[in-house]
View 1 (spheres, helix red, strand yellow):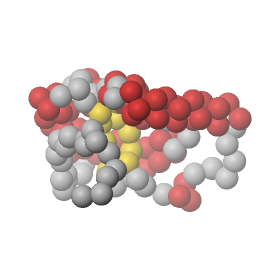
View 2 (cartoon, rainbow, N blue to C red; view 1 turned 135 degrees about the horizontal axis):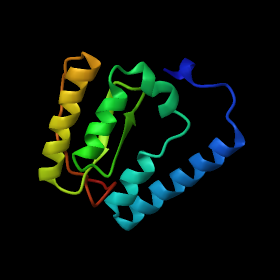
View 3 (cartoon, one colour; view 1 turned 180 degrees about the vertical axis):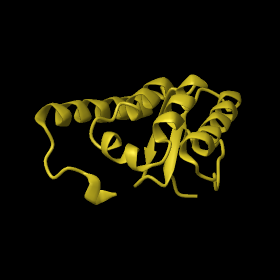
Length: 126
């Protein structure tokens, strides 16, 4: 998936990506899931290139947003898609919608789909 990325990036895309990165950090620091989701979903650099390589990804993202996700994007090199949701009930609906879209529009089997809560404390010695 790294080879799919362009060797150069237009200045406007770099500026937009820096802004989205700043919004992501701000959302994390503020505990604002809506801002985190919006920032993750606002990728003009990687997602437009890698997204079409994932069967059904556009439909999966649309299904997640329609089911109530704050945002949805590719996680890692593309074997995983992640959505940010406001609560567990919405998460279950989004999880089902994304899985159904992968099956219907991507022609893929879903190996694993789950709703997970983020740890609000963060890094610490246990």
